[in-house]
Length: 285
Image (cartoon, rainbow, N blue to C red; front, side, top):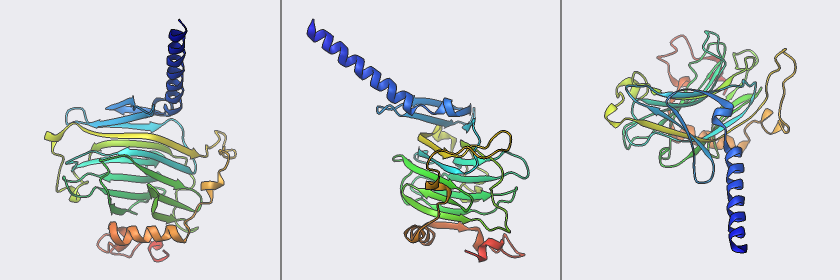
């Protein structure tokens, strides 16, 4: 009888711990609304894993945050589409909406044929002004395991980070457009980008490999929330850890490394795109 009670207590404690871990790691339906092919499960560690699926018949999937933010640090772990992912686009980004004067900060992963590097496209939009892409060949297989992708957005700069490495800094200049006035929500999508994603649309999705699947976990938003009445921002404790964040010398070194060894496209080098002259920030870096 004593042994049975001990087993019962042990099982009860294990169930309670699992329930607590599950509650702590539950984020998809609490934080986001979903659209299309979206599924949530839990892994053996109790982490919630959100999966987006793309098929030719039913399209892709997406989730977008219920809350809008004005500055913050946003991160998520992702495992991208394995194998031949050409034509697919997976994203993690911030957006103020779809209007002509919208703001947006993008991390878009453009699929590629098996054995070729996946391309990470970073971009910043302000007042509807985009065309500020930096694209990088990822130096690892993003489908083999989860990697952490981070956007730090503050009043001084936008920073892009892959795992522990900063790869880009977009600086704010007082006389140039910058996404600093419009609250933005957080989004993730998987969609058919055949017209654009791989080699400028030359390699479309091969639907014989469908369904295509991407997984997200460990979402975090350490960010300020705007007041409904245009009052002061509501910010979490310790906001200074990202609100005034700028790169130090070592981090500028990783940006230089990524640019030197892995950059595929830099809008500031594209004279065909800007025949009347490059955007002003290109000469101030």
